[in-house]
Image 1 (cartoon, rainbow, N blue to C red):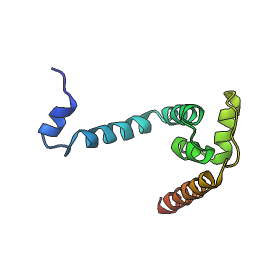
Image 2: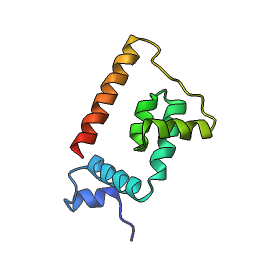
Image 3: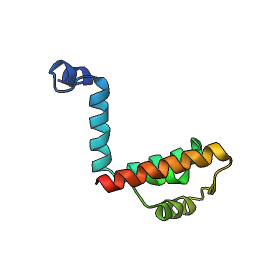
Image 4: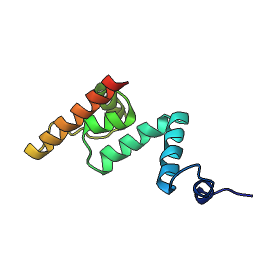
Length: 103
């Protein structure tokens, strides 16, 4: 017998598929924290997220994220390219700081 996401929803253990997936991903990242780093590197390299966002995603410091990227040969993009991106980085850092205070 194999279980699936719908079984968990039908048993009223979760309200919907999205809640199951969120919990599954949270558990996966707790069990395998290296996956967060891999995802952050991939996202920085391919999705043009900022270094601050990559560090937040990986749950490492800004400087540690820089080290990880450099060791992997990823070209660093330091500094915002325009005013909008600068504002986005400020917003991201404010969220990161607020989340750290909440911990």
